[in-house]
Amino acid sequence: MQKFPMTAPGLEKLEDELRKLKSTERPAIIRAIAEARSHGDLSENAEYHAARERQSFIEGRILELEDIISSAEVIDPATLSGDSVMFGARVKVVDEETEAEFTYQIVGIHEADIKSGMLSISSPLAKALIGKKIGDTVSVPAPGGDKSYEILSVLYK
Image (cartoon, rainbow, N blue to C red; front, side, top):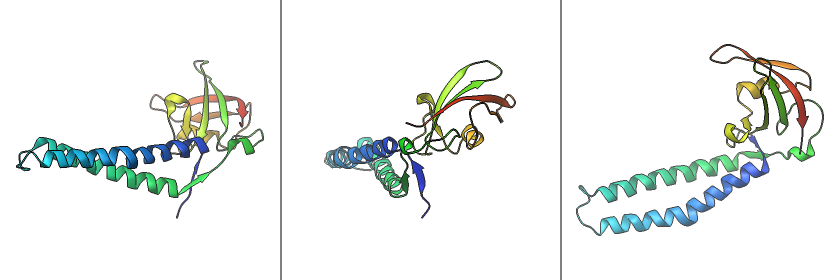
């Protein structure tokens, strides 16, 4: 089985979602299906079909989360150090064209959220940053042409 790197907070978030689905969402949808069944003819019962569709989504997500959690390899960035970029690093970069600065933490694919600054390790930018040091410049292919970033800082915490 292939293991996927993940931070402890990322794993905790997925475990919380799994607990919520199993303890709250699953029982609620079972009650909704029972209620819809009590209304009679199932072939024309929109509530029943919607509830069954929701149940299918919930059960699929539960299986997906269980698979992800079982294959997670938790890496604590606080135990890492150095001046080169690795998984878990918080990297501050500057776009060499616009001078805009961005800070990203390189995380596992299942916990990535670019709006929160969580950059998937499989993203083109993260792949370009891995192994580089402060002061290095990386070039990343983008739809409007290659973008160049200079690494300003690398932190593990």
